[in-house]
Image (cartoon, rainbow, N blue to C red; front, side, top):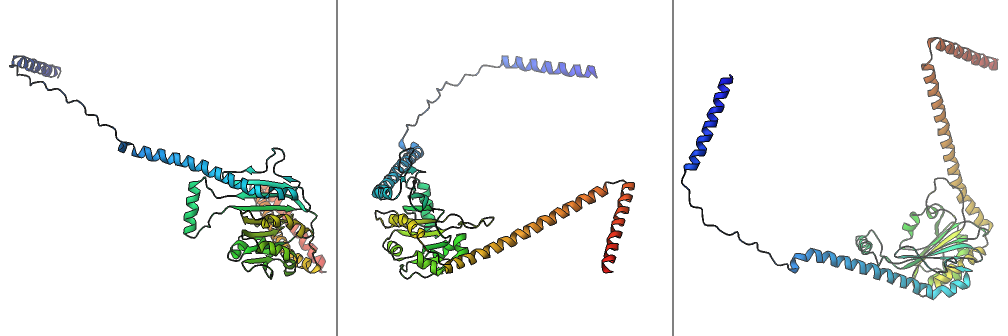
Length: 367
């Protein structure tokens, strides 16, 4: 075998030598004339090559310009509005703005501004939110336009939302709302306090553009006096007024009435009716006389909710007690299962003795 392998290697070596010698003896062929490699052609740059970059750069510049210009425009609008009303507000409240920073408006985002007030009869404190269109946010603006056009949104407006928490000593805790008639049902159904406690009421002195929902017709007549109705009727920028001592969302546990507060919403304008209403309404509510008839109606509305809460609490306690009993029974069964034979025998004897005593007691009672 080794000899055969060696012979094969020698044959391959001889063939390789012969091939090399044959190449050396072969006549040299003329080399082809040398050709220089073509020089690379460089295409000159044109504006067409930077089309995408130019679009991106222009978009970025436009975004920055809109962001800055929109923010500045909103700031100017907020300052302009507060400039028309700050003197009147300072005549109504001891504190207007942030006393520590000596500023009237606090910016809370690119389109929201906050004004804090306190120090007035019948008022604990109040927040005036100036909510402007998102002029600095193109994306939000486009989304709002699209959703509004397809019927799932409303047009953004420059508006003010006043949230005023009234003094704890004010008499009466109730729910009442003045809403635009075309949106009244939608707003009412979306809030727990309005949906649970109020019904449609009649306010003859109020414009037909608005609907009143209240706990009592007598309460409506007391709150919606001539002056309040006049301020609302003469203000084209009015949106809604909600007076409530209940949460606007359904709580996990009913805890009764909280502090009386009101939420007044209106479009921004230089007219003073809505600012005047926000400042005078605490005095109207503070001087309100709650008659026995109104008190009875308010009490009945709350008794119904208290009964539901008591029933739910009783059901939850019963479920918790049943669960504890089931857990105790399961633990006892597990303990018995792990007993030895002798321990189980003793346990069975005790159980039989206990059952026997129970039967004897029953017989004694019958006799």
